[in-house]
Every structure is written in structure tokens, then in C-alpha cells.
Image 1 (cartoon, rainbow, N blue to C red):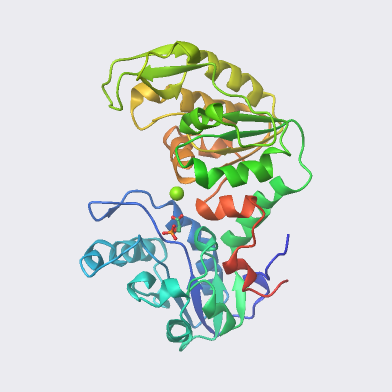
Image 2 (spheres, rainbow, N blue to C red):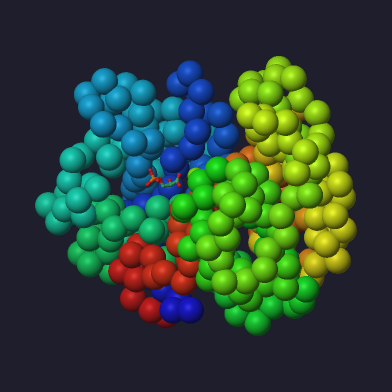
Length: 349
Ligand code: 3PG
Ligand code: MG
């Protein structure tokens, strides 16, 4: 894989540095629901401050603001407050949500110039946004000497290992609802895996018509529910005995056991997507069983994608896996074998 040059090689003393981070955190009633991405941005910011940067100006998008009203909802202020609590340094500046400028998502050069203005170096640490060719991730990298931040490099390193020689068995676990987003990744990575386990809504679709060029393991039973509701009438059933009109909202206990046994023997694992509607406790057992097996395996285990990351964190198992990616779409596009525009714009090491 092509590796961009590291911020560690930059001469930052006395320089004014623009940092693009991915501080796009989930918000709940104006509060930060999970500050993982803010914490993950700190090592690069701290490195710049420790090495004597004159100013460190951080920018990020937050949400997908569409109109004037969204300016209240997606103002950067709560993110800035949290970042300042974690890094109290008067050289730190935080710009307003980059997506409040209409040029941002068009990769507009004018907006990129405004971002670059007054800065002497550019550091991109926003792995989660590296699949976007936007002014703050792409165009600006051509206007200032550009470097990759520590998180961006760590993500490329950890995810990149899955694309190279891996220890076997290599088990790929896919789930979740965004089937179309994920089939391309499955096609690229799945053929290299020894076992491909599919759960969640994706399993239903693949069972009907398998568009993949290799064999996959599908659930033998599900937790079937009479309707899509948290308190729906529900019971475990073999897949060929699901009552007509009922929905599979989790993998069943036999599947959880079978998948778990395969996962525990793996030496390399990539897991993306929950096995069911794990936000509802009655349909969470399958995802929990998978998370526990992934954590228990003596394997190089990577978890990517918003929902499976949330599941592994809520279960307190994040410390038991090798890498939890901060990128959703970005990690998938990387594993699809695509070049990420935010990475491509930075000169190589
Ligand atoms: C993400 O949350 O996956 C990144 O921050 C990118 O956000 P976007 O999908 O709105 O570009
Ligand atoms: Mg996502």
C-alpha cells in the first residue's frame, strides 16, 4: 500500500499548522454521546504542540448539515469544548464545522485557500473522512506541505495488514443492514478469507441470491419476531421454520454457537456489522456472542463500521481486540482496495 509521509518527519517548530481531524462524533440532545474520535485525534495534536508548533488550528466536519437550521444542531462548539478540556493549550484553535461552507463538499479550491490561509503546514489525521474528496481533506493538501497524522497512519497500518499476508484461518464476519455498501468489500476480501460468516439482514439477502463468487456460512436459525418492534412476540426458529410474515431480528442460538466456534479458532479476523437489532436487548444475544468470540480468539482481530464498533465498546470488549477502526465508510473503501482521496493527496514517505 502507498503510505503518505508522517507528521513525525515534519519540521513543525515555530510553524502554524492546520490539522484536519474527524471529530464527527454522535450527538444526543446537543451533548457528545461518544467522544472516541475526539480522543483519537489527540496524539497528533499533542505531538505538534510538544514539538513547538506556533499554532495548531483544528478543523472537522460534524454531521451532514443541509440548511440554515442545521447550523444550530451541528455547530462545532460542544466538540471544541471537549477538545479544550482534553488539550488545554492556548495555541489550539478550532474552526467552525467545515460543512457550513458550501464549497467543502465540492472540493472547492477557494474554500481550501481560506483554510490554508495563515498556515504553513497541513496535517491530515481524519481517517474517517479520507474517502471524501473535500476541500479540507483533498484540495487543501495541494496548497500547503502536507503530512499524515498518527491516527491516519495507524489505521492504514492496521487495516492494511488484512490486505497482505495474514495468519490463517482468516475469518471474515459481516452483518448489518447496509448490504449494498458492503458487498464490494466482501467480494474483495471474502475470497481471501478461509471462512465467511454472514448474519443480520445481509444474510437474508445473500440466502435469496448469492452474488458472491465464493462459499459463505449463513445462519441455520434466527430469533424470529412477529413484527419489527422492541417488544414483538419472538422466539428462536430454524431458518426453514420461520412463521410466514415474521422477521429474523437476530441470529439464533445454534448459529451463535457454530459461528462462535469458528471465530475462536481464527488467527485473523475482520468483523463489520452486527448480527441483529442489538440495540434491542431481546435481539442482542447473537451480536454479543460474536463480540465475545472475537475478543476471546487468539487472533489479529479488527473491528470496523459504526454499529459493530458500538457493540464491542458497549460490551466493554474493545480492549480485547487488536484494532477498533474510527472509520466507517473509509475502512470499507480501503478494504475494497480503493485509493482514498485524502490519503492520495499527501506525498509519499
Ligand atoms: C463518518 O462518520 O463515517 C465520517 O465522519 C464521514 O462522514 P460522512 O459519511 O458524512 O462523509
Ligand atoms: Mg457508518
